[in-house]
Image (cartoon, rainbow, N blue to C red; front, side, top):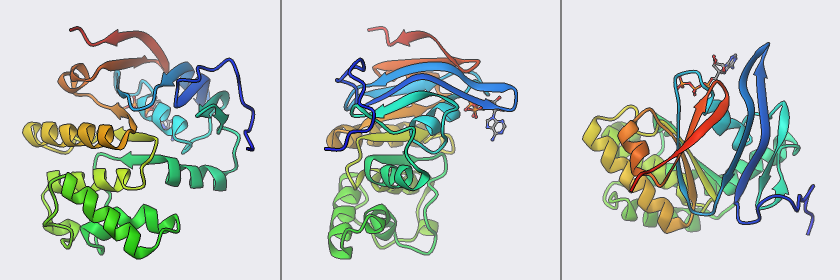
Length: 237
Ligand SMILES: Nc1ncnc2c1ncn2[C@@H]1O[C@H](COP(=O)(O)OP(=O)(O)OP(=O)(O)O)[C@@H](O)[C@H]1O
């Protein structure tokens, strides 16, 4: 096994860990020293004022951005120093992403959109489409696999994006304002669908949100202020 920079001090229960994460833009600190540990299968809301560093934290943990300082580990293996190519492979195989707008490919059907990460990862078309149909069914879209994004409602399109994020069975889902473009009721239904599907897949979920009610409904909330984690607010029973 080729483990890069295994750090025995890290909590081996964590699926994803960030230690001392710093990200600067010019002289501005978007992240000013963040420590975070994500346990397998847990759902975490990331909240904080606009510009506090939430999206930057998500992007650094997901390997989209490289931190200026600090270490990131996935299952005990350092990933922050991997090449762009390796990080891109890792994002495709180990992580799933849900953005505010589904970012679906307009020319492809719902099931082709869902199958895409698996196809890019080398899975056969037949296997990828079978898995895609199964996840669409679980998300209540069994009848819509042949529809193109333009034929779906906002909530349906977001559920297609959720299926796409989960079909390859990632360890962690990164969701940035996944319900921000939806009305309150559809947003809640979509969020419930995301949480149930992620639990079903055994994936941890990190959700950046401005929605206090949503954040309060998750078992763990991490608050970012000025690029730092301020005292964590745990949901009150
Ligand atoms: N590409 C960039 N170039 C320069 N500064 C950036 C860039 N991306 C983010 N920043 C700055 O870093 C800080 C953190 O931004 P970030 O987008 O992470 O905040 P956020 O908490 O997600 O904000 P919002 O809730 O408004 O989406 C902000 O001050 C922002 O202006």
